[in-house]
Image 1 (cartoon, one colour):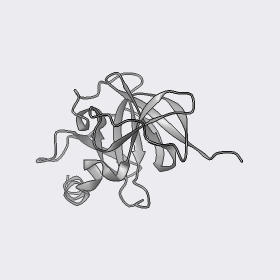
Image 2 (cartoon, rainbow, N blue to C red):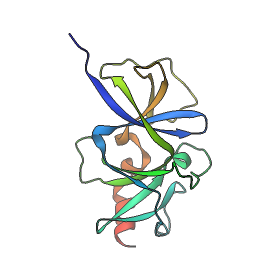
Image 3 (tube, one colour):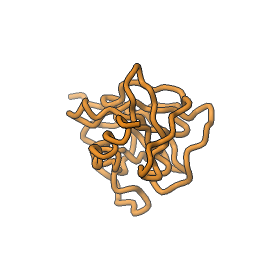
Image 4 (cartoon, rainbow, N blue to C red):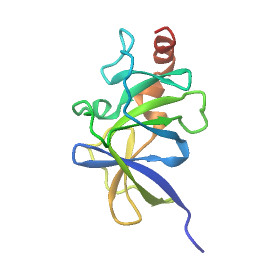
Length: 156
């Protein structure tokens, strides 16, 4: 019997490789000019994007992980995402080195706990043996604190 696999879109924060499940990524767009974030937003809120007529909050995953802000490299992208089973919570996630994909076994087990990783990730190994920190969208502060963020964005 063949094992089920999931496709993950990868990006980098520092020296670490992270992944977002492709199932919850609607689109990957270049780093575009953003409107300023509304007043009172967390420091990881990079700004607001006009996505096909809808204003979306855009969070900087590097800042959210406690690293310096993402830089405007050719490989910097905005992932348009929504958490599992919550399509109404659509947002952008800004990430550097967003240029590759990795396959991960659907039933992959987490590797040893890595205290250097954000709480919203799980450390796994891809099918090719590459260590990945997989992002749990529903655990990102952006989506946990959704209502005040959405209200701030829609009022901007």
